[in-house]
Amino acid sequence: MTVRVQQADFDVGAELDGLTRGNRKIGGLAVFVGLVREMHTRDGLHRERIDAMTLEHYPGMTEKALEEIEAEAQRRWPLEATLIVHRHGRLEAGDRIVLVAVGSPHREAAFEACEFLVDWLKTKAPFWKLEETPSGEKWVEAHEGDDAAAARWAKK
Amino acid sequence: MTVRVQQADFDVGAELDGLTRGNRKIGGLAVFVGLVREMHTRDGLHRERIDAMTLEHYPGMTEKALEEIEAEAQRRWPLEATLIVHRHGRLEAGDRIVLVAVGSPHREAAFEACEFLVDWLKTKAPFWKLEETPSGEKWVEAHEGDDAAAARWAKK
Amino acid sequence: MKVRYFAWMKRTVGLPEEEVMPPAEVRTVGDLVVWLRARSAGHAEALAAGAAFGAAVDQKTASFDAPLAGVREVAFFPPFTGG
Amino acid sequence: MKVRYFAWMKRTVGLPEEEVMPPAEVRTVGDLVVWLRARSAGHAEALAAGAAFGAAVDQKTASFDAPLAGVREVAFFPPFTGG
Image (cartoon, rainbow over all chains, first blue to last red; front, side, top):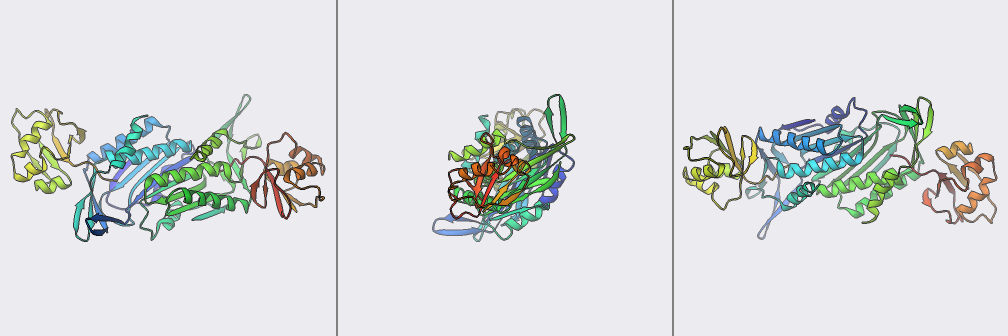
């Protein structure tokens, strides 16, 4: 039942320990850690490596959006514990971006709710990616696959 | 690409750090932590609390089974890193039982492979649960839901 | 009323935010878009009719026909690409 | 040949494992089950015809028609309930 948006890195082990400590009803904890992966863009004949990116967000709205998404997951599944920690600012390949953790008595609910939260984060939370390439900065355009991933939850 | 069966607890944060360190191709890490949850059995009119359990396994066969399951996941999805750590011996409510972590460039593959591994662990790995109740010990019987969960992957 | 811009819109407009006092006939978010375009070439480009952008009213996603009465903050931004 | 028992079968048989030398006509896992039943009341109960149990041959799950030629270890166990 916690949402945090921060520039600093997070400690996955400590976050998960804090989430489950003292709760003996949790049988399964489904966790997602999003990392910056090394990517390449193709611009005409040039293949460029993306070394880093900056995640801009809308302070105030971001926290509200994440809390709404979390509350929606709580309505849909029998959850004992949820946690979303999302970073903003400049991030390099290999850095952690986001942590989503969901604890439930049953593993199926934990997995489903975790995937639901991650899919929604990608499309419904006010974050924008600015990628750094050797030839300059470039705002990432919306990704249709992410919309499709989020849309499958709307059918339920 | 690591499988371990051990009596000792594991450190989730350290395990995940070790799994992803130096690999910049991982965009998503899907993780499952199985915990012993406090449960109750109903035996006629008596409702009994299960305080602890002992997980027996078949040393030698267990490692082989987990390595096979892991190799199968590697064949089915484009994975960069996989880890299964499974405990055996006596465990109390709140204790960690199993850690499954899957890293992939894409989050969908990571989630699917992680769920696949967990479903298979429940039905295809040689573990048996002996539950402790105030009135004595009881071997857990096979759970049809787990078989159904594992069976859905066979259709693919 | 505060108006905020994010991502490439902030750079195109040239400011992250501004205080504006639109006239009474600017009743909706859509009216505000049209009214803001006249403020500068950057505004006109960022808020052009063909550009893909959304809006939030008091930090919640809103459609362009959302009313502005009593609103303290309106934001404009491209589609979310984060996480 | 080593025979191993797990979970409740270990308690019912009364041993975790034993070395056995079945005669040549015991050719499959199923033959071995029938032959082992005669060893004790515990064996007969654990390996009874109606009991739900599976087998592994040299640490891999095997069916009851699996051959025993060259096999070093056979295990009997109830359905897995772990994880």
